[in-house]
Length: 482
Image (cartoon, rainbow, N blue to C red):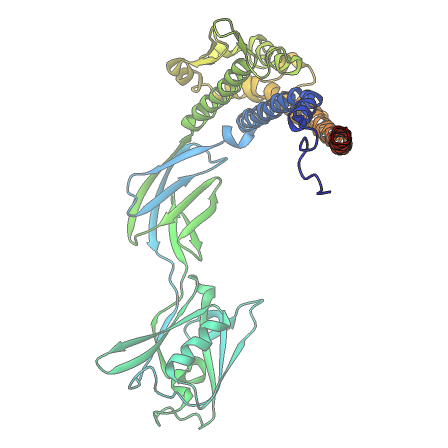
């Protein structure tokens, strides 16, 4: 008998449809579980957004509690071409007259004689490079403490170009280059940094002797006036920047003066000129930080409102509608907003500095009122940044920074709620897999049972046909015998 390859062939019954419908009935709980998983995933995503915006509020609040913000200063120069002023944290307000006597410079030397091209050979030997300062007169060299001499081995195969590359590869504080003019190619060397202590000397042990007049030896690249070796000519001496600030003389190895005035950086740009620098407290930075705090608060409170609201028209609730953790955070945010603070005698409520609560729960910023508040930075700092064992004396930003740290911490409500939702998602996924396995076993059992039934019915049908055939044959024989 041919094997049955499809259910129902032997019996004529639509077994495939029966099995499909029974399996679908058994699988019905999967739809509910998948719908629940989708809702859980949406909630996890919502809590991820809440965590991100809470982190943004924490950043904005921490900025307002940072003492550096309240010490920030702005600096302006009446002539940036002479002196550029950059304010920083802790710069004292005031006016400064800056007279630039000299700009810092790097030592520069150039070979006295030229070669035909950068590919011309330079001789062989050892070139020793040292960083330090020149005491003149006489031309005594003082090596810089902590900087050891660097030896550069030059072979007969080296050219002007490879000599340049070897010098630059040492990273010894000198940059070499090749300058080509009408007479040929010359080696030029310059200190990598400005300042009197960043000068250099070049001693040469030339394989063809100390005579630089032969035009082929390595000694043409020596620069050591104290030893009488001047194959290289000095074009510019290494020197410190020199200036006076309100009549007080100062020096610097670079043209950028830092630390001369606390919190202030001066960039010297032109010699023999004077510029007036004004330093003032950076009220604009404080105002921007307060506005950023309001923006971060509004973004967070709007998200919570959107996620927890119920729309009576569409009869659809937000993903976190009825979620106790989300609504609890909303209450905490609003509670802190409405609570006054005794940190400042001048600004007891956020509305005193221009931040007012709106009907939708967000903050509006009154720029004029905020401008006026920044004229009293000492009290404004207390109002936002004060920290005290007595919670009623904590600053507004301090309270929100503490709340954010609490809810975002390992045991915080946002973290715990998110982990709980993820745990439910995992359980749901495992439940779906278990149910799918059970449904598959159920389907296999049905197929086996109906296959057996189909096979038996096929055999019965075959037997029935055979019996009918035999009976018909017997009936025919009886008729003939008569």
